[in-house]
Length: 184
Ligand code: SF4
Image (cartoon, rainbow, N blue to C red; front, top):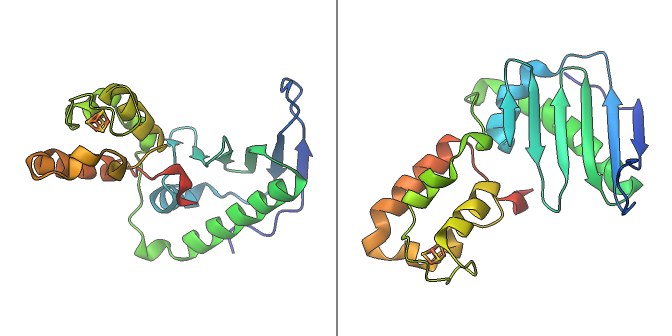
């Protein structure tokens, strides 16, 4: 097991959060979990992976984040104490499980933050038809980059005339480990 169950936790309300509606938390430990990062990035679709500084950020739904450092895990945006503890337990389990299976996983060193909105836009129909609920393809491209929408949310993309664009877009997103926020 790379990381023992986390018991050194500090869960707190951020001083600068005037809404006082979320909790942040930090867990520290002596184990070095950085060897798992390229595999965790590959399996969970990290938002940003800074290999030089060994920092991996995971963006979850509803404004929640988990940031992994070699000897520290930080979470942001938990609704309450129960959810904060559940997030720590979940990521500890994921790190161990993924690291255990690393022989079967192709490590990934790029991340979603590398996706360019303009590159996504070029692969959309660019008709600004609004069928996705956004006023422009540009707005949809920005939401897609963030994982807030899926390809299926752009109905014209399934039309035969856009098949080539769609296939190229699927490959482009896949190469950066894109995933929708609601996949967790
Ligand atoms: S549905 Fe597709 S083509 Fe229409 S505005 Fe949205 S992204 Fe553009």
